[in-house]
Length: 116
Image 1 (cartoon, one colour):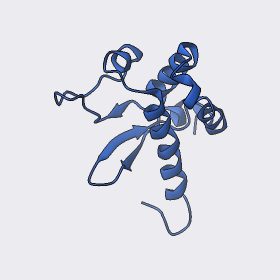
Image 2: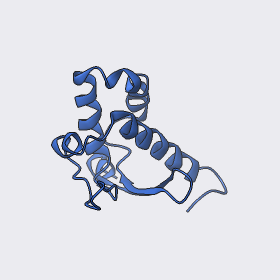
Image 3: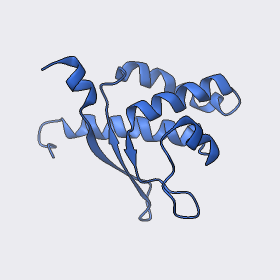
């Protein structure tokens, strides 16, 4: 398998926030290294006050998540571009949560007995 093909492979993931609130995403977990993404987790909290870090997280989120069903309050799917995320005022902490939990779901699905 070519690395370029692996980097384009997507995995469907359902993130459950409880009370029937779920977000469906498709992840390309091999676009960036998981260790690199996990290192960003430490910056999620400070990113609200640091536009450079927030922009980095938004850019990586859009590269890693090509499809989602997150909607604004009017029921429109929020565009997966940095500009779309800013316009919809999506907090980077939510983006970070989706990335971390998405990686966790993919890793859990690869464990013996957990294959989907």
